Image (cartoon, rainbow, N blue to C red; front, top):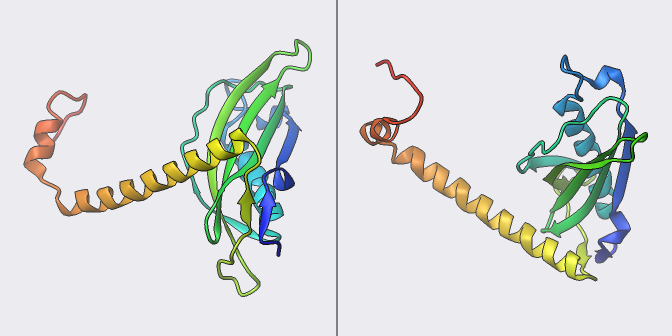
Length: 182
């Protein structure tokens, strides 16, 4: 295993034609198809960086920004944005292209946390990341910040469960569109 690798060494692009069997009743491509392709490209990128098998540990927010149509080409571009000891945050940008009109749409951006797994089926250390451009530095820093916020959120969420107060909760729901039956 190399001690450090460049971002470019594991960048991966996957392009696939969207066929009718991928569509829903509205004629748009199922979000699950896009998510599956995102998981696949995240795996390839992480496996290239770690030189081995990886698993998906978490997926940060996936927003569907624009629909994908049957007949469009979808390209998923993945790169390692951040590395920890055994984990990597893979940034994924998804675009679709209408091959007749050449209109290109940005449809998704997401961040997958992948963990490298060794022969012993336990997490293994991954190479560090060589940051060569301003974009590399920005992405690494942003991923680090998202990771820290996520850890803070998990701690806060755990304390909220311990400190739950039904009366305060009912007051906060007074102006919401819900009915409460007790």
